[in-house]
Image (cartoon, rainbow, N blue to C red; front, side, top):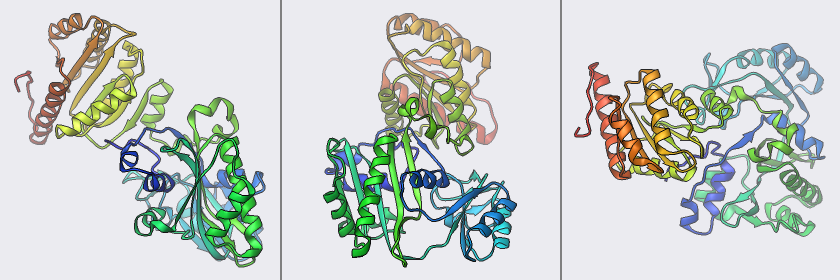
Length: 444
């Protein structure tokens, strides 16, 4: 099954690693969750009385210098505010290396901020395109005596909150889960009881906090769970959660995600959304009421219903093809929705064929076919379209498509439609490579 989770966070990887059965680990579901910048996360934690290093956000080099001066000490840490993992090992499009750096003076903070702000940071999660850095977060440099990992998230297996923790913080938790699974502590939480003093204290002891920090760690764990519940979070990941040399319990780095379905009651949180960090096509699709996720393949998919979309992509993969996107137009599949969907699909130059797989229930198949024909004509589309329309008036839809004279091929059987999509895609790809035109027919 294709993994469609856009936010491939470490905590979710741990959740998969500790699920009870291989079947549960294999069952990957689509999630849509708001991610916020680290400085926003830190401010939210601070508002709940959770310890974080002193710091502030800067959008100009001059602001970075001013903030570094206000922190008092000589040492500080400057962090590029980009919604991607691996910032420390990333490279900016101007050649500057490292999205997380130690600075030893306010002047150096200004110089490094100038290298980061306004440039794209490329990490293992962003791909070659990178993501724009519009701000930097300047924080005091704190020295950790011990570093831990802690995350609060929803567990798919138990369908309940779970706290995932490890004594091996400040490192790649996926590697810890794989190489040393015994270092992962998983605590399922009864949603009716919450995180009791006993549960939080037990986690703090198992992690290895020193005796004088146990109660602070307990309080921190309980407050993190409070944020998780009150703010409709899908994930709160702290890596590292540190005990400093002066015995403070501090969240040194925080990654928070929130349930999109809760936007109506979490207006403050969703006002922090930064669309500059998101794929422009996905933002456009969401504004049009479409569920769209861009993938790396070359067969565009237009489907109504998330389950059918998953099945469509799976069968394309089984036939040797690669889907270019997940696109669910919803229950209506109106001509307007089809037009918007085609605009999104054809904006990807890699797309060499389009597989339309729609069940006509609320909207009849013949109406869908008319909308499809109209869109292909208006766009003067040359990319072959394989249409599988099932449901009300499917025979009339089949007739309309076959008599249209366009490069739309109506196929009833799902397997046959998938096979033809893959075949057409390969032919178009070859034709593009040698720069020749190609004619299509179902016997290809």
